[in-house]
Structure formats: structure tokens, C-alpha cells
Length: 315
Image 1 (tube, rainbow, N blue to C red):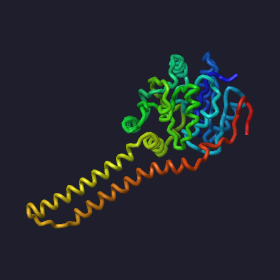
Image 2 (spheres, helix red, strand yellow):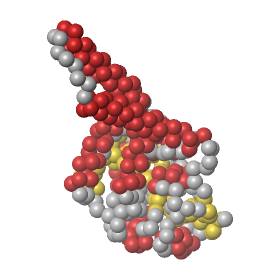
Image 3 (spheres, rainbow, N blue to C red):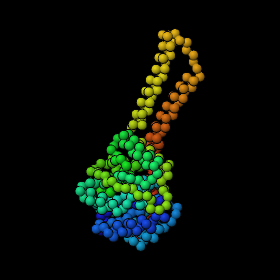
Image 4 (cartoon, rainbow, N blue to C red):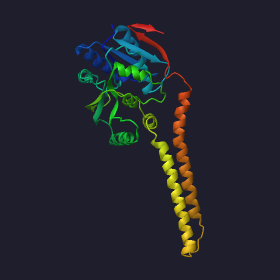
């Protein structure tokens, strides 16, 4: 008999916090009236995370483990987990560092039973540096202004998704995935739940600035046409600047009879202005072309090396 709820946990080099994660998940399943399966996804870990997952899953059939052939990234690891869940009612997505408290399942489930098909967590407070908090704050607000859809502010991938929403998202073949954006795009009845985001349970973050920037750009370029329109507006602005300067020069020469001396500074300004505009325009177009390039290849989003299902290893 399939469980009511699946909990998907992508993991990458989380051996330090793995035992704490198991304790919290086991306590949750023990105290919950719901039938629950845990889907752990190893995203090509280099430490002992995969071995710990395998040992636990063979001993406890409530754990369903997926081992990817290499590191595909958090969003694709989470996608891999969503592709195999067996929960008949809903799926809870959490991170393995316990910054997404699994104990909130009961509160999310209450809202789900009220008719909400997506219950997403809203980070009221974050235990991170002031610089990161500032960057996150402004990014979410800039993204919302630019996006074609209503992406909730200060929300991550921590959410409870109905079975119907999961099935719908599994049909979306985007390579450069931004799951919280796709979650908003599919629609259905959604609601936010505020919580205080704690610190990592152990170890260091596996999400460096470079990966954060990549996913941030996916959030902007995958759900907005404003960058392309920005190129047009910037082109019009530079034309107006150049035309204004040309008219200004003509007025000096023929109306006010002021000698016009063509100087190095004016020439340098013109070259820098137009070169900068062209390079920025090419960069913006390149971001869209890159996404098209990777999408049209038609490669699978991830490769599953093997799985452990119901305590048995499946190649």
C-alpha cells in the first residue's frame, strides 16, 4: 500500500548532519498519524553520505533512496526525487541540512486538507549573515517586479505539494529548472506559511555564491521577458543621447557660432557608451541563447545510477 505523504530530501556531502536528519525524520514518522515514506536523493556526494543512506534504507523500508550518477545540482536532485515519489496525497520538499524543519508537515497538512494544493514556507527570519539576508531580500523583490508570474516573496523550495501538482510539474521538461517558479507557474490554490529559518544542523553550506547566482538568474530569465525589452529601451536611450549631443553640437556651431573642437574625451565617451551597450545587450541575449542551447539538446535532466526500494537494491 502506497504512503499518504512522501518527503523528498536531496543530499550532497551531508555526512555531518545525516544522523540528526534521521533522528528528526524517525521522530516525525513515529508521532504522525500519517503514513510517510522518505525519498532521499544522493546528488553525487564525495563523502560517506551515500553509504549512510544505503545502510539505513536496507534496514528501514520506509526510506526510498536514489543515487545519481554524478552531481547534477540541487534543483535536478529534487526533480529526481519528485519523479519517483509514491505518496498518494502530497509531497513535502525539504533540505537535508534541517533548515527546513520536517516537523512543520502537520501544519502544512492541515492547510492542505482545507483545500490548498501548494503550501509553501515563507522565511520570516533567517540565521545568516546580514549581507546574505540583504541580497536575498532585494533579489526576491526585484524578481517579483520582473517576473511574468507571481512568485511569493522570501519563499524557497520548502513546500507541501499535492499529488496533482507534483504530477503536473513532472511533465515540465525545462533543463534550467527553478522549482519555486515552476510551482507558482502551474497555479492551483496556494498559500504561504511563515516560519523562522534555523541555522544548519551541522557542517558547512554546499550552496556557494556561484550556485546561488546561477539559480537566481534562472529565476529571472526563465520567467521574464523584461531583460529583452530592456535591450530595446537601452538602445532607444543611447540613440536619444547621441541625437541630443548631435543637436547640441549643431546649435553651438550654427546658432551660437561657437567653434566646435572635436576632442579626445568626447570621442572616448562615445566609444565607451556604445561599446558598453552592445556588450550588455549581447550578454542578455546570450543568457536566453544558452538556455535554448541546453534545452534543445534533449538530454535527460538526470541519470539514476541505482535505487533502494522497499529495502532492496535496484540497478
